[in-house]
Length: 363
Ligand SMILES: Cc1ncc(C[n+]2csc(CCOP(=O)(O)OP(=O)(O)O)c2C)c(N)n1
Ligand SMILES: [Mg+2]
Image (tube, rainbow, N blue to C red):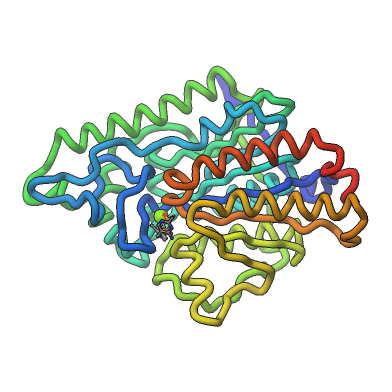
């Protein structure tokens, strides 16, 4: 049966009066990179990190790469936008950022973020690796739109597992080298493949059973016609080829279209945070604050709510600023998940149901 496409015109999105409360954003480089490549809940099976190195005794991580996006659809929120994204698919990425910021309630986007230093891959290879991640079925591009409490799944690239592409993907990164040398670890590779396929199958079942009527999303957007991003200066200390750099540019490009410079970023401790705030020099041209490794989501939600309250009390006369929370996988999957979940519930339900925080007072 032919799948119906859902064409989303970004110009229409930009005309929407509605707006998000907070966009929670995770760039997923699959380990705690800032502190020396330690394993996180996002690290995949058999992947080498400094806390679970791939060697003779230990063969990398024992355990699975957790899925945190899909569970968020079951938090019982009133309205939210949840999606995965990839720097290798910029139209989809930028379209999702714009839609997230134009959806009432909280939003959560998770972007796959190659890390040449931690993954032991070539700096010039990050885009190819990210593309292979999606095209192999490892990092499907999905969207969950929660409206009036009902989540509906969509996807924007075919959800098909390709063993050939997956092998090319893992062979591109030194973090899996121990699976190929000194000997070919067939059982471990098969286990990694089984886990990857199982995660994909789970998402496919969600699309089949709880999918949108037209579940294939295509964003209509002319990137060349967008205003240049005005949030992040070109100078920062991220490594060459770091996915977070490319990701931040795409995120900021989308965010600039919606918010202009009326925006506040809240950044958990991470590579992105240290690399954009070196010594007393900031790479940020708009308001940005660093918060603890674990609690940035709470702070971002609190800032957004405070402005809405002040606006209601007529103590803040200008437009309420947009808020984006930035976090790595360590602070999203592990130590910060509880903060993030609670902030999602508050911003996607309580804020919407509280007339003192509602958009009608924010015009
Ligand atoms: C409570 C607490 N524990 C540990 C740390 C040390 N710490 C700072 S950043 C970081 C890892 C960050 O990993 P991730 O969130 O994945 O971001 P990345 O550096 O990979 O971009 C850790 C463990 C901290 N700052 N606070
Ligand atoms: Mg990380």
